[in-house]
Length: 467
Image 1 (tube, helix red, strand yellow):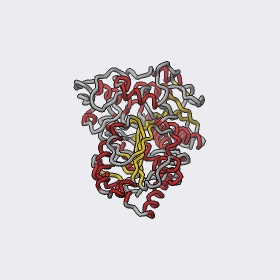
Image 2 (cartoon, one colour):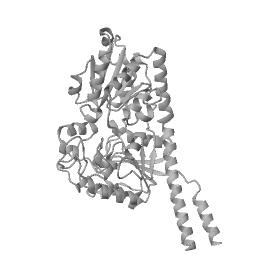
Image 3 (cartoon, one colour):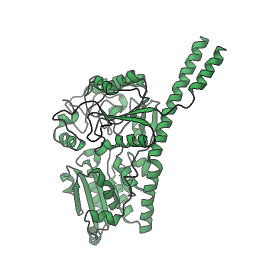
Image 4 (cartoon, helix red, strand yellow):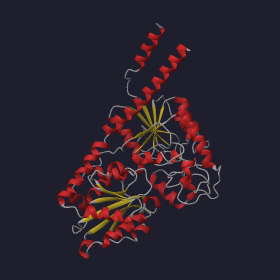
């Protein structure tokens, strides 16, 4: 009889519950630049009737519904663009602490048990229970210590959405091809005089303990899954989920190319327009040196008349080292407000993404949603959205010649062939990056691990019953 009641109790717990309560945690302004990734998640869940809140580091102007951890402090950057300028001009501010660094590594903080913001402030900002804490950007806000504190307070599912490599090694934002991540860090090449037991090694050991305790669900595209498998922390980790990006496909949509070009006063004699840009054009991992090499190769394969029909649209900060070496006529448009991006994507024949170390970028997905082909290297979201989908071209990583071949591939398409590619871009965006597809996967993953926990609890009770 007792066993029957136990079974009945298990059956009742397996019934479908109401939608989970979700808190999206993001360190950066969700209305600016790459920070809008978190805002897209928030909107998608809201539009689909989910109970969701969004917690940021600072209050967001015009959004009193967003929770925040700290009031605005005099002298702190108020938005991403301001932060970018500071990061470019002072390395110590970029890292958030005085770390003797070298190379292209960037550390938010030195020690996992000393987060950028005291965890108690984060906990005080969480006013009600949640079923899911959905962490997007960590920058200058949280560490694994914060995550453990949140878990110990709420005992809910913790989900990592990793737009960079920050959570998966010893603390750097992008690990590149660093061999130390597979050994648990130490002797960090990003530090001057890195030692066997430097803070990166100690961070990895601390993070491993937190992973065992919290057991977060870690999201990633195909590229990120490949990276996870190379790391000491996640090589054998079981809670990894492959997911596609989320794009606001109503906002990012195709606009007539002629109309888009007229808005920016583009000379109608320019028949082939290529758009590229990123937050900081001089950042090495964005691959601009490979793009310049590829553009020169493409230039050499055209006649003088054809070269005059090409125009490059360039967006981003700190562009001088790049634009001074461009082989074609160009139009530099600087920092682009979000509301202008659909027009700029739509005016182009292709979006050029030469990133060589990137989890995304989101601009690839935005371009596809606008019906504009993408030429990228075989990394990041391009592996899922471009490669083998006739939505552009994926070149071999670091191969500028193959990248130039990709540009020529789009250039040589007939009108009908090009129209088919553009159609495929929008089609795959609507298949994989919509609100509905995101929410469906989000709830599937939540239910999957909730059911697993119930099964484990039931088996434990059976064991206790017989023992």
